[in-house]
Length: 477
Image (cartoon, rainbow, N blue to C red):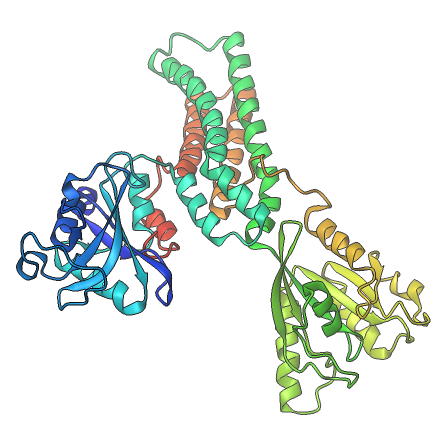
């Protein structure tokens, strides 16, 4: 089945459909060049199948090339006869020196829905089939150009929300995670070989020297896996961001705070209480952390159906939030509604924001600190105290520690789970060794651990998991 899939030549539009400067139709497979021969007329008259690898050629995409274009006649620039679809640049990358390790042809045309679909239809009519989501990268993996962790890094690069997230994904694409996992796996392989030899030749007992060697290898693998696991909580933040919700009663300056953090007028601000009656969500980059922040309606007790629905949305954002930014009007005394919000918010991580610090302070800060430790004074109107607030948010996310982009960081939940499973199996193997149990128990735990590590690189991955991973990609990548 796998062989049949790789025998096909696939094609897709690899740029967003719509108006733009350039659009790309990509082909990959053993028929890519012969298909290009049927639809591309080079200015110099050569066929794509004769082009050298890593070369770009100017010409035209033509319908029914052999029957509609007279031999010896080149299309003129601007000619829009019935057979000419578009002027293009055609790039050839021959196997194995291509992204998929197959022959690749990329047709760079003018970007537009009609022209891109027309060229793709021509390619498909000449023998290619439509590529599935992520199939070009899947082929790169199946053909051995990249391991699975690098393939997943490609998706992380596409989905990166911050420069720090991009740097981490590029590090993984260059083999950072693969090298760490392979190092741990190689250590285990030596020990497994030693144990399997003892199983095959039971008359040779494991001596004290070998036990120490096994213990050291298990300890080293556990340390390497533990180090990767330690990075996973930070990596999850880097990949998915943190979700923050701005809570506070009406007219305390929630929308002004959102605008100040975004440095743009995103939310409508007026002196009239209750201006915001729906939730507004935006994403901003805080030193590499994607912060998904939602401004909510300051409604405590709804007076009509609209306010009731707005309150329901506020509650939904609150339940999903990783962090609550609880805003008070520092120029007013605490109200009953403020107390209600403090009682509600105390089960979540909270940063208290005392707004309107440019006015005379009237709020009882000591009473607030009985509930919460982190309190920041700001003036959203005058953009005062925002740097301190941003630092508090960063500390909440990563305890104030931003990992260097050159270090390996586990950002994928699948990788993290495989590492947790591997760690548990190492602990079981070490326990069996310390209790002098049969070497079969130790060997089986270590082989299962090795299986978990190879799941990360794709050496032992199941087909259904593989399909799930690549289905997250866009078509054309």
